Amino acid sequence: MEALAKLKNCPLSERKMRLVVDNIRGRNISEALDILKFTKKEAATFAEKVLLSAIANWEYKNGQTVSADDHDLYVKTALVNKGFMLKRFRPAPHGRAHRIRKRTNHVTIIVENRKPTELDKASNTAGEEE
Image 1 (cartoon, rainbow, N blue to C red):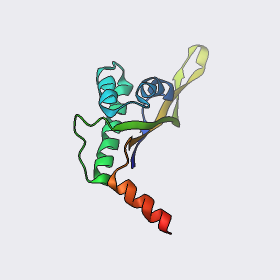
Image 2 (image 1 turned 90 degrees about the horizontal axis):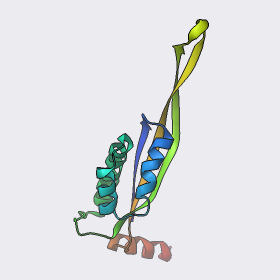
Image 3 (image 1 turned 180 degrees about the horizontal axis):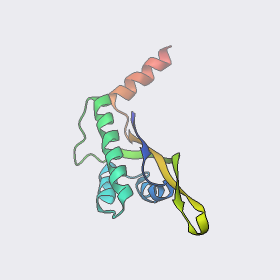
Image 4 (image 1 turned 60 degrees about the vertical axis):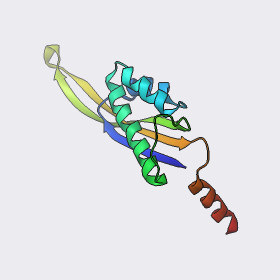
């Protein structure tokens, strides 16, 4: 069973966030958390919060807790999409103005268990009976 977490309107450009998120895609959650913890970029703190939220959502859905030795949970999907852009102007020489674009992004992380749980098995058998 998978769980989803989203962070919308994160105040970084999507290119900066993608550099960090690409490192954790497809990894176990323990590896991903270690990578994010020791990455020296501001985007890593935002990505770590989203990953922790996705793990908490998975725990709530399944009614189980994730232990430190649990290597079955992994980052299935990690997406970074473009958010809205704040447009500002800064004075330039000769009475002109230069546009400043303050970019944002939307981060989506999906966490899934490699082995099917009891809830997955029950939902699959219920779908086959209908």
